[in-house]
Length: 558
Ligand code: GTP
Ligand code: MG
Picture 1 (cartoon, rainbow, N blue to C red):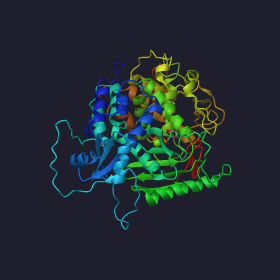
Picture 2: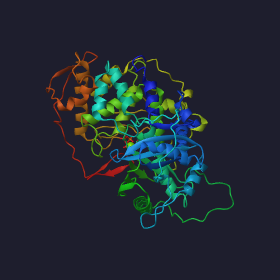
Picture 3: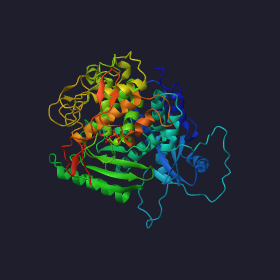
Picture 4: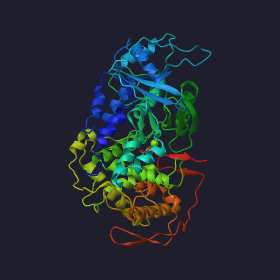
């Protein structure tokens, strides 16, 4: 599409290389991920997890310590990459050191020491610090080593984002620029996999096959810098019971006992709290339908949500990753709509009766499947199911069928729709401002809106578990607010004439602060006239103190 920023791939390359202070050899995995070709979700996960198991995170005095650290680490093996970032208000410096083999990391860890017993618990994880040698380093900087400490793991400043958007030439460019600037970068992605690896490592003795799978926006292609890390911990990993005649003795699990699984989570929470370096602010939310432990990993600066069931979250991430990869307009559009929703107060970081980022993403995907977009940009979920091959078969242990095509190259659907991002953004707003939410449900399986099976104000069918409504938590008041903001956004996008300083999507983000006259008439693309509804005049629903975040995940709110 000609309206996609032509510098997109260049920019992405720049973002990905900016924090590499040392790069001797890009690993096979990274090369693969760097290629333009599509890397299926499970392959991407395998590569990233393997990268993390070959890496350690080391706190150092300054970015310049990389020369000394590199020289030290090279005695244990071949160092492939070193990345730099800061944490703790840019006061603390860290380097991610990636070796070429996991065994080299093992050697380095075996040789590493503990602080004495009175000062710290002697745990061994992938998080270390590098003692100053006290001697001046004589190491010379090789010409091929580039030092760039600009980006690291820093969340782009709001003012910088706005400045970049102001200097764009048109709205389509603004949309792709926002995506470029805010999308999760290489360092932030590695930090999330290292955070998951730390949890696995702390369990190695008892559960050598344990896997902590990242899911959600950290891996589904819709993550922005600073997004949380959703983790699901599987103690048996993906090991299937084998043929061996020798079987480990184990504690009996007498059926599914909720209180036992809550106790297990409690133990996990205590492990994180008392033994794992960097894990702070542990909150155990065990009464929820899916119990979770929230914690903040301060060494990687990542907020984490850890659960021990719910593999369907990983499948859902696979599905969203797939949809986001089918067409290059999908992710920029989702980023803009999620940012707009946040700015105008439709979404909120704490759970409640508002639309979640996840639901908002599904709304955008469902819109892109609509036959009214001539032709639709995305295929239906049923098309992905029909095209699934034998390798795509997967049913979770609780019976959720997650069989769908995972390899885009095998998808027999290619859109000829060439609408630019600006046009798609307008169409999104128009589509949902005239959507009949009172009787219809949004459904990604069929690309047709189906009749609502029950009376939740907003009904979005969970594509993997069709009997469930992903947006059951949304109140009528919030739905009305959504419709109101959609009309405001349409009005702004249609009525732009000359560029004020905050134009295009910037003006859309600010619309909350502007008051549009109630009952004013706004133009619409189809020539219809729409009336701006009065603000939230038909609020009926009240909210309980404990809300359902979704069908599977309940979260407490204060
Ligand atoms: P962020 O706001 O960037 O964290 O987006 P996110 O997609 O990671 O959302 P969140 O952390 O709230 O949820 C993590 C993942 O859990 C989502 O990506 C979904 O895969 C899954 N999830 C969240 N809400 C629901 C829901 O209502 N139903 C189902 N089935 N899965 C959900
Ligand atoms: Mg998340």
